[in-house]
Amino acid sequence: MVEITYPMVLSTIQTVGILVGIIYYIMTLRNTRKNQQLQLETRQAQLFMQIYDKFNDKEFVKDWTNFVLIQDFDNFQDYMDKYGFRNNIDAWSTRVSLSDYFEGIGVLINRKLIDPTLVDDLMSVNVIRFWEKWGPIVEEYRKDFDLPQLGEWQEYLYNRIKSISEEQHPELKT
Image (cartoon, rainbow, N blue to C red):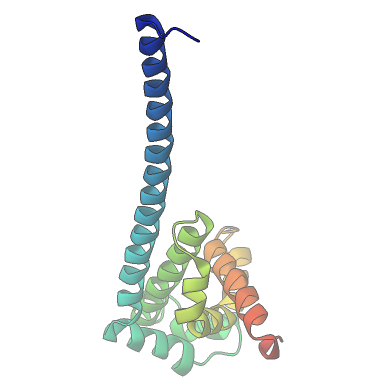
């Protein structure tokens, strides 16, 4: 028969205490990671909703409609004559505001601060139409004004959203 001594009991209690502490630490660490992930997802959703609120603002909708659906131009020179900063500061300012808005969304997606599928689900038509109208003008701006980075995040946004959209809706591929 084994004789149980005070040091054996103490050693066993210490071992059990250490094991319980390790298990508690692992569980706490897992819960902390889950909570951090939830907080991140919540912050991303809040950020996206701020972006989406601006997107649905009456003035933004008017500006987007005016630039994408109403303004008409045949080429870069025609655009500059009708809507360039020297000839039509209001139209030019509206276009800059829209461009900067989409540029910002592109940066946020690139830095993984918002989920591109959210943008696709709620804004894909507008993102795609905007760049398809504006993209050829950006390319000319880049050349004529030596601005190689102009609109780079708008173009990135367009390419990401277009690929997601085409993946979800193969019938839309052009």
